[in-house]
Length: 229
Image (tube, rainbow, N blue to C red; front, side, top):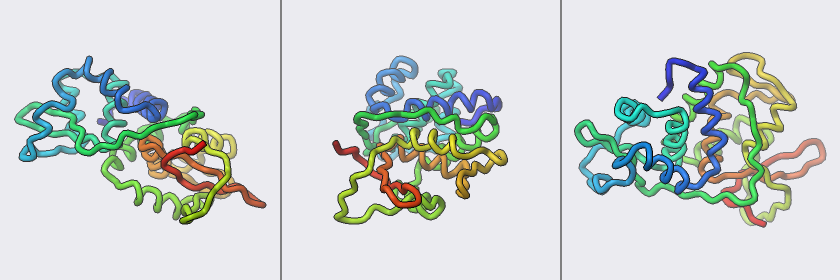
């Protein structure tokens, strides 16, 4: 649900990023108090009920419960992990249909600003919602094509570089570059668009980290689902 007020969309994006490393139980416990009889109800087990798109589900829930920006952020994060909206007449349910439950260990979250422009923040949020149903493999492949320092993880190679949260990586890049327009962030000759930042946030919410691969001229990074000690 993109609101007409882009300052509110900016708050939703801030909360999506900040809470993207919380476990599913955190969101379920909080949302159950706000939208009772919506999460994982028996209706979720009825295969005949239609699944509906994230925008429609958020809009229908908002009509009934007047969701806050934090409520919307929590729901978006669950949707990025595989929760689905199911509709029965005018009722909407948020269902755990084989959703993932990522774990996060010893994480340094980082606080990327993701620009000072509300239109840019709204564009990133829109890309996150539009990317909810994109598979993880495609997200990673597209990022590797677009960002030179992202490398495909080689089979059987034991990497020893440090681990970073994706938010931490984004915050580091913000120190190296700047937004040259509402849609383009540039650092060291590399451009990041709203879709690439959204893809990174989607991956973080699904439990991915970055592992550094030290090099002579620059450090590269590989994506890793679980952080090992």
